[in-house]
Length: 481
Image 1 (cartoon, rainbow, N blue to C red):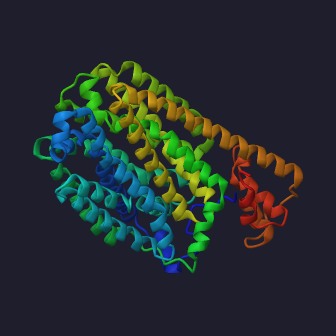
Image 2: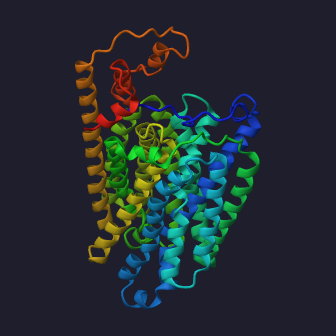
Image 3: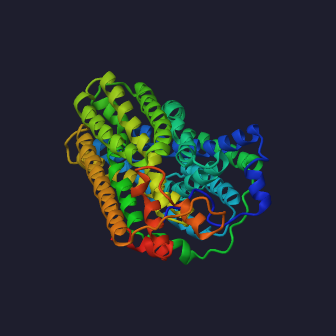
């Protein structure tokens, strides 16, 4: 699979390129990056505050079931989490494909408007069923927003900052879990969960204004058809990475979806203590995202080889030591640190695997992340409803995370074997790395691996394809075969 550098798949206008590079002042660049992260902050609050407010939502919208069978009521209220996740799964590829010819700056502003509308609807729907529908609508723009924000952030930060660009776009989400979600959970417990959603809507309103005023324009892409954008789905590597995200990250959601009840029923805390537990989780997520962005730019595969074992070990510790408030806070911090550390690596891998379909690739990561959200919430709720108690989701989480790591090892092992086989079949001739830009040798030189790890990434496959006289797309068709 040919590696695509993190840039628009087609060249924007010269005016747009100038505005995105040297013409930007440091202050303007910081404001633009803040605007992108602010939208991520709102999304993080919208997605994760439901978990802390789940008991309140259940008591308000399912009073009869909560009076008769509280555990079943909590499990059913978990549909609010699953519905949002399903909205992300449906919306991420759909929006990315339909908006393939739209300017990224216009697209991200429209997505922020859609997030605003969906969140307001979540706050005002009078029944459980309508609230579930509103949560689905609120999730539709989520994946596409993060996908486009990652690409814009990377272009603003310059070459060689793909991992940091992804981490920057995700920073709003992680800070939301550190500050926004605990505060909004406290507000919701005291003022009602609907107030929390209205406050999140206000964040999206500010985001829309900032995106329209401070993010530099990126020109409309040249003609690219929907069929061409969908060609990313022909790559087996794309599907492999989607599966890794959907299964591996589901472990954290099996626990986090029911963290309010786990905190009270297992660790013995009061409801007022739940925001503190959430803040510990958010701190771990924020630090993990920072470390993950830095580490991914140095070794994408190494980040996963270290991150997944840490993630699994932290889940085991959570199961063993969550019986006390200190144990729960410490282990939940470690789970979220390791989990967030993996995020930039997996998203960067998926963007590369998608080739020229960059917006689709970046969006699909969040689709897989929310398949994980829905899967984790459903499996965690199932073992709770079956009567195994609130410790049981941690066991589900360990199994899911371990399966995800096994999938990583299988996918990278297969990719490495294919690269070695291709190198033996088609020897690579010397390439003149000093050739002038625009010549065949110069183009091939851009794909030369720069490290031992790069020799097993899609860049190697593309280099082999160039040497054999094949197109990058032909090489992509053989990936993961």
